[in-house]
Each structure stands twice: as structure tokens, then as C-alpha cells.
Length: 166
Image (cartoon, rainbow, N blue to C red; front, side):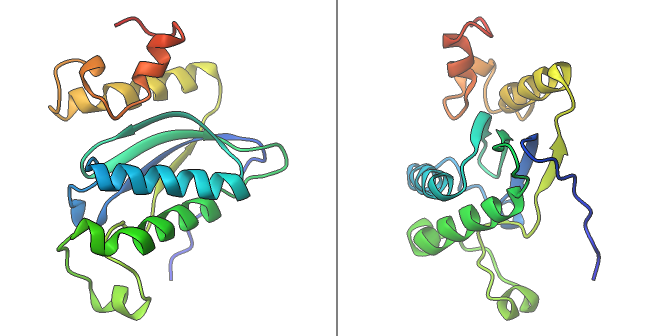
């Protein structure tokens, strides 16, 4: 079994990409957004973290989190968030993706890819680059013409804070 080495810096800021299983496009539905919001709040209450930036696309999401000092355990947070969405939403979402024998044996659902991609934010410039990547990703995927047109993004919060202009 491969060993995935991940960067773990207590109190660190991390960029993540999480993809849906078989790239099924369910993430932007009203049900999915509600389930994800609920899971983020529930997990965040027990294992605090700050969502610095986020974007939901139909088949994946990107986000930047900052963890509390003396805490580097983002993997547990992701496991719990994905489990909560799966537990609450498998039937509600009606996703028709198949499950391999391996997924069945591990009792895994058909909503999320098993792994996520992570990058440790190194400095302010790296943070700004990744925020730009997050907020302009819907444009890159052809989902809208301008970042301001995509509603499932923290772009609007950045505009309100004066970080971006419309």
C-alpha cells in the first residue's frame, strides 16, 4: 500500500482540492451545498479551522484552510466532513456512480474520491496566488465569463473586504 507523505505544520495554512467520485457533478446542487455547509460547521465546532477561501464547482472544490496553533490534523477534518456529507446525503443526492469492489469492501460511498490534494501555503504571495486560482477557477472551466458571476465562491467576500474589485 502506498504511503502518502503530507506536509503537516501546526497552525499552518493549506490549499486543498477535493474531487467527487468519478467526477459526478453534484456539488453545486442546493442539497449538496446545504449538506456541505452543515458538515463544515459540525466538524469545525469540534475541530476548529478557518476557511480563508473556497469555491464549489460541479465536480470538485478548492479551498484554503488555516488550522489553530498546535494543530496540523486536516486529514481528520476531511474524513469527518466527507463522512458526514455521505451519511446525510447519499440517498438525497441520488448519485448513480458505481462503486468498485474495493470501495464496497471498505464500506465507502460513491460521493467522493478517496484522496484529496493538499499544498502548504508558504507565504503571502503563495496565499494570494492560490486565492486567485480558487476564485478564477469557474472561469477557467467555462462555467462563467467572470469570477463575480459564479455564486458558489468566497470571491464575493473578498470583494466586500476590498481585496478584489468586481
